[in-house]
Image 1 (tube, rainbow, N blue to C red):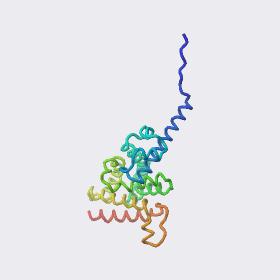
Image 2: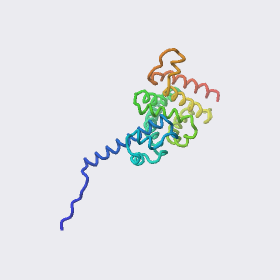
Image 3: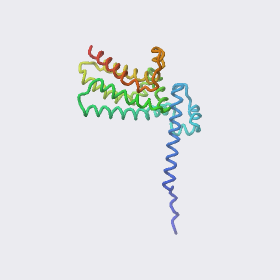
Image 4: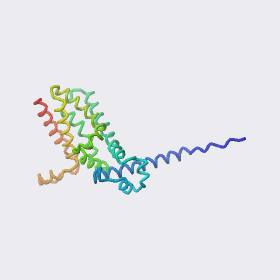
Length: 225
């Protein structure tokens, strides 16, 4: 008796379904990122995200899970990119040797400035979202495993340059450095208001000033410890 043939999905069709599934997932994550950025985590509902992504509630749940899981995924995909760039920059410095505080500040800040200056609306939404949550302690437990490991690598290098500085002092100056970076990316309107001159549209244009400012602050603060 002849066996029934296997009805295997042609590889082309399988690849097409996977591609469509990834595209839909990206659309859901992009929509969630925009909603969280515009309204904050607490105010956003899954229904809003589904409406923004133009998909059903079931599709959002399938690709993102709960709102908490979706929030974590939105952050993680951006952090993975930033962490890789910052780690590569640090590895390059370590391979070269003779690392200065300015080198470390530049290596840590520049990847974010470059990405934020590309004009990608989704990265702008991410920058707006981070500006919302960075000063709210309730989100730290959700984001610490995303951001802290690479930050600790930089802290270790800073402490090699300033071995007498306490862990608290170094953590403080790095936190203030990050706050300065986020501020210049999120808004430059006050610079224009105070100076009476148009602010640059690109955060990357402030790279040198920002790096100098943060380097000076770190050096001064740690010299006292």
